[in-house]
Image 1: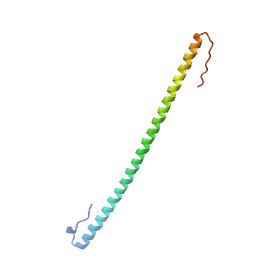
Image 2 (image 1 turned 90 degrees about the vertical axis):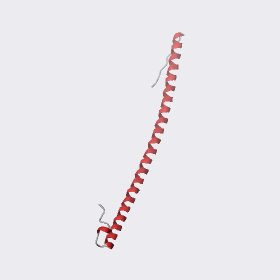
Image 3 (image 1 turned 180 degrees about the vertical axis):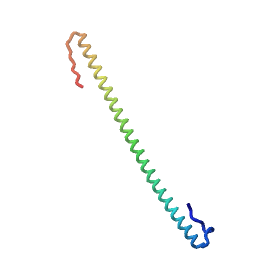
Image 4 (image 1 turned 60 degrees about the vertical axis):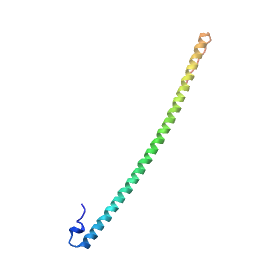
Length: 99
């Protein structure tokens, strides 16, 4: 709660000094709050940038895994078809797939 203003006090010099002291303290508090808000905003911005970087990395890893899985699947099916062809031809083909 703000102290009495100059108009409410009997001593105008003392009242003016009190008002000035209150105004300075209020301005210092607002400055502190603003500084802390800027720090918090910078912290949140950094967290957002870090999250975006991690998401990009995760997407790159997923793409590589999907490519690798597709390649493994194609290779498996190629070997399976090759084994069936050898079997149909009467040749004894044996494929060992190691996981």
